Length: 358
Image 1 (cartoon, one colour):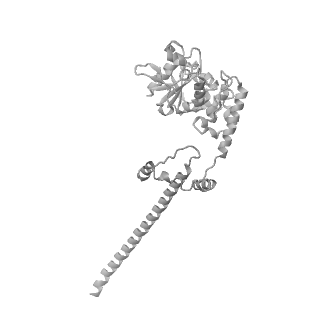
Image 2: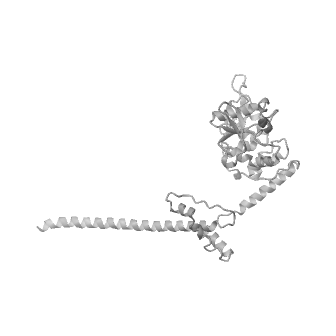
């Protein structure tokens, strides 16, 4: 993922491509494309500032800086679209990138905060409901994926966020408020989610289907030129396959998994994992009282279940043993208390009867 960096003196520069585990906190810009957008090549050869679209990039950088963020991302210039492999990866990652942003700024180029009604009151709300941003295919995921979505006028004036403007957004898009509030997308049917993009448009017909990758959590190869019908056919096929996989998933008891695996292998795997329990890394984790999470990582079928089941069994046995000891201690304390009370009662009785005999 390439990010733009805001310098201390206001300059904006394009960073090198970063691996996923090295990405710092960042903001992300959502907008509609217009004339003279700043592209990847413009940023690399230093001519970006000469284009009209640089105003949006400047706005994104300034707003991120005000929010304490040094880095931000813009789709026009942070993707090298001449590289087909990079473009494929970017479109597959787009939903995740928007979801991972600290904030998403929606720049509305056709909404002015200076619009006034006849009585002088602000009238930007009507322009907001009719703005082009709600008609574009890619902005659907840009509306839903981020944690925080803030809307700004063409002048860079804050209009509200997804929560405060939720009813307006629902009225325009038909997307349920609970979906806008972060509910799991799989809670909504395939048909309902498909309806969210029905009235939206994309410049390239296939992008109407590709823009839904994140909405359905699927990926398919990009085949520009196949047309909208074929791209949606492939998308629906992948969604159907994904749903079948999920339907086949079920929770299992690791102890039953161990039995099943050992029986399937003719008992050859019995105790084959015990070397793990003697390894230095495991012993350090096991012997430290503050240890909590044990993460067993490996490829499928490489034997993670067996040591995990063994450790679960050991922990359960330790809990049972500790519970028994605590119960025994509780009974002992209770018996000692009863014995002490009986002894005190007997002593009080002796003290009372002795004077009577004198």
